[in-house]
Length: 512
Image (cartoon, rainbow, N blue to C red; front, side, top):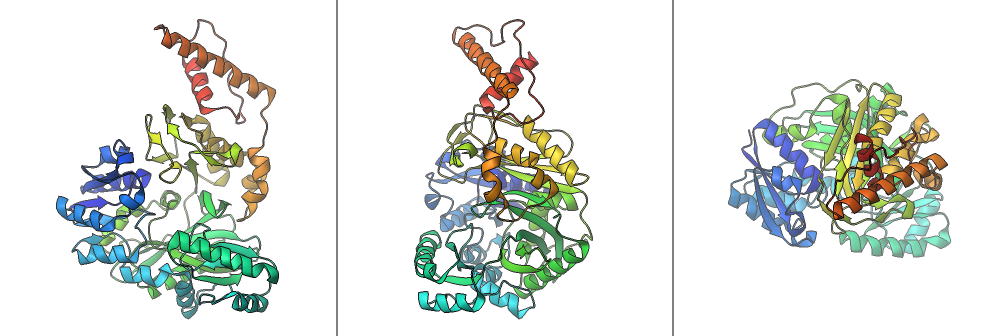
């Protein structure tokens, strides 16, 4: 059993690992930058060590420094979370070479799957279907034109070392190739330090479906089923669910078997995810393997009852998997990524201090967050504030429960994606599960452009007036309560596009 784990990350995933360690009787060590000195994960860990200024390049990405801290505090393992150093082969190797336990796949497995071209070659060799395309980086535009002609337009140029849509361009004709290739290579070099780009056939309107795998060091690899991740904006996932409406039991088994074959071929150990495109005809194509815990892992936990982070720790300590792969998911789970962005203004990042945070609760509701009332939100790190996850008996129940939970959520001080998620839950196409990876881009104008009804506007105005009165009284040293008998109109069932600050005022007025 592990004794002490250093968590080389921040925010909600760091706090998630702290909690897993505490339940297992393992001591936890947080690291933090100047910007995170007051963060919840720092307070909740058993120990915390300052590692540098706010920029990640001077703190969370300084692997040698993090390893030195782990040695100094007597940690016997490092958990990288997701992002930052989690998929860096050199860091996994350096942790191992320092005599510490790496809570993740072997460095060799990261290397075998870290390049998309290398992963495609490995998939082809083990009968895992891939999107038709090249397995070597393109040399120049002439080769790109010749290759695209062979597959037929449209094609997709993709950074070999990429992710998150960086270094990716859709090309629909030969005369677009040269410019798109130059642009993709520049972006890839800036984002990943590698300008290698390859080409593959562009699949129109597919779903993004991924398979969670778990592998121990004793040769057991199992699939824990699929997650639907098709609600994306600019290749960034925004809502995930498990299972997928498009996956039958037979298809689930075929995709799971393919993911297990790939993981075994890569020598994979620990938790990982194989990502696939699923077309309208039920054919699936391997995209890549994520060699870490995923942001969306909670939806799998809720439909399987398996704590993935605790099993990461158990497997790293040498334990064998003691259960069989689940044959079917139990119920339905949905996750919304709550970000500090303004959907009505092109998802422009929002900064400031969270003056008040009201967290949803009740049956089947989970809140994974790295912020609280009083937290400062800046531009240094990813804008994700929290993950709101719900479980329901079926998809309709889960959608209704998520809608209810979002209505309870209040984030004051910064703009958030709450209203956007509410409107997605109300969208008829989403409710039917009629989605694919281009769905949100097509529907976004109608989702974020929904207008408030006169009743909703009146509710917002009353709430704002109540808040203003409370603040005047506070400045004057009087009571914070509203004037006796002040009229407050309850919010209608549909989501009202009012600020979280006004929503707080409305709620406090109702309580009083």
